[in-house]
Length: 193
Image (cartoon, rainbow, N blue to C red):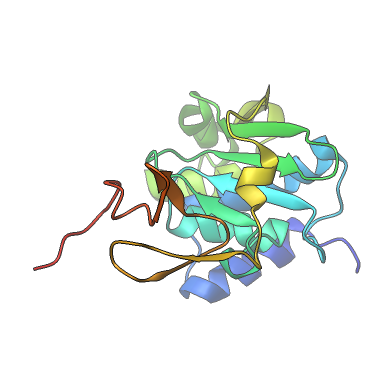
């Protein structure tokens, strides 16, 4: 597959939202740069790259379009810290990088779009034009959870002893030798009304 250009990828993410916003641009630029740093051809056609985004929304879709990582392919995860940041993991080598915007990227955006009609438009256009060194910060990182645990086993199934629901992908937990889902084990985001 020929390498996608910034313009192509921005068009694809804009089509998902019927608009283009600065966070989509950041997501696309981060994903493209992750490919360069990890020396991977993106957007991927296989499942070699695993990406963990730290917020949802337009940013995450920019990441998905530029990397080929998607929730449905089990190559995109969201650990919602409310940050425009992502960690990119090469599942073959185990190498991982975390990328986020530079703390001065917003101020610098105005230099690259001095005639922008608003601050928002300065971000939108500036982020597309800025050199990576002015826009993004890249840190090599080590995961605190094993790659095997993140990727898990898609064919593994268990049944929660408390609620009786099926648990897939090896996501069950053991409490006193009892198989439970995370919700019944006390890590639930809901309760029955």
